Image 1 (spheres, rainbow, N blue to C red):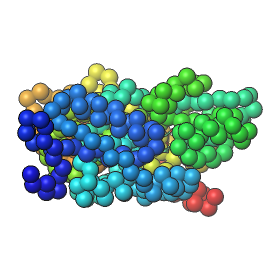
Image 2 (image 1 turned 60 degrees about the horizontal axis):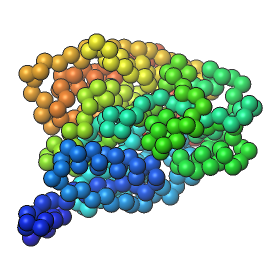
Image 3 (image 1 turned 90 degrees about the vertical axis):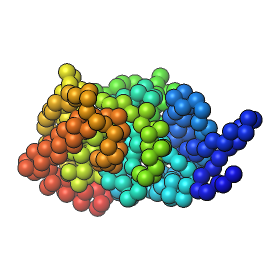
Length: 350
Ligand code: DPM
């Protein structure tokens, strides 16, 4: 059988079918996320054969460098994208929040979902003792919590989830750490959470809690296959968040936070920018209608902020992009650019 760029398998009856190879990083969380997506895809496509390919990435090797110092270089995604490009894998599962709002040409996010892996966006607080030194290297988390709880002290903490929990447990450097609740739940460590932080305490990062499947943009079959994972509310919320971040020219390491909600066919987007100590901030909310006409054609291959979401209303996706851009413009008109520029400069000088 001609192998070409793809891999095929022949079953006992001699039927040949394509093997879909799924790339993943090697961390425990990455493996858990990839397994959950593959399980779901198997359920929805019982006749497709899937194979998981685990790879080390530069991102893993330098995880001990604070994210805020790494900047926007997509270190976690580059090697996996190379593998996609070379047809060594056909899709890759990521945390949406780690994917830049502009992807390299040739790649797209074919599905975005909170529901594949019952996830939520909020932050969680894991507390050890009363005298509180909080471990986080997220500028966004530190800025918001410094403002709200001035008595807290903050210190950088690095490494993957396993490393961070170990540092909290075994060292006296930290009395608490802040992590995305979604990651802890996926690891089965929900019982470690001392407190869930709602948006009034700490708004989350763009895309937080959503799983994203990245594919080759030209690969229509795979794009259609993974589109079954799309849940339309998540797609629309995440598109508006990413459009907002992109418009502010923010990357994943600036103190920008969001909160989105869908109620009665209205999409609400709250966005905020902060100075590093949280003393200076801007926060606004806007909304848009996302009600869609069921007759509408929804399978055009249009990419919006890196996402090609088949099966989700095009009009609603356009409204979500516009909402993000409009909110970005509103904050820019109030001085967001200056706040972020100063934050970046101070952080680079640290
Ligand atoms: C990004 C940030 C962090 C991750 C920055 C931020 C947290 C870094 C830190 C863009 N990616 O949130 O302000 O605390 O030092 C990351 C986690 C997950 C995806 C872990 C976490 C799991 C949750 C998810 C790291 N990326 O934030 O606790 O899938 O959304």
